Length: 222
Image (cartoon, rainbow, N blue to C red; front, side):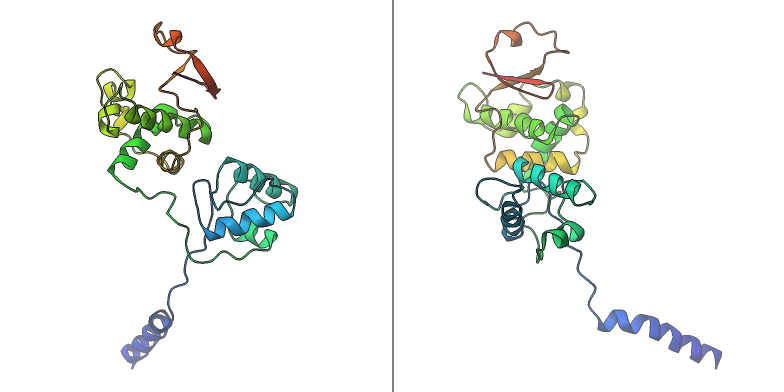
């Protein structure tokens, strides 16, 4: 009798899980995401006067700043991510999935580029991380450098992270997103082929290059 009762108790625990599909994970938007959900959020941020310009469906730096400001003014956790609480406060319903998972690799080039960004710029702002990735891609497009991501990154003497082995570390989600943003065409450097940390470098030649912009600790040059 006891064994029969135990069996029925176990079945009562298992049966609901068998009959009811598992609840899907809540959609959370963050920098690097694209699609209809991002568009919804941007339109509401524009409506509430937190975001200027048009809605393009791309969660970039401007949208990030607008989300953070909205969160701060509305007593929400200021993390720059649009999860259930922030979406509810905005009055939008997020559905389905984003165009690409923020931590998913699109290709072997994306994986290697993310590793480079992590090794070279993990302490920089998100824009600074995208900028480092963009320099690699600008080199790929230039006749002065190898024409592949692998060729550029592993070119002899090009990046210290290759010689010291830190290129082999596992990148975090921010660096993965930053690499994807650069591959999707965002170039905060305006076409630069070089970058360096002015406080740390002892390379006199790199200082002869023309600086186009400074983002965080890195000077970007041509």
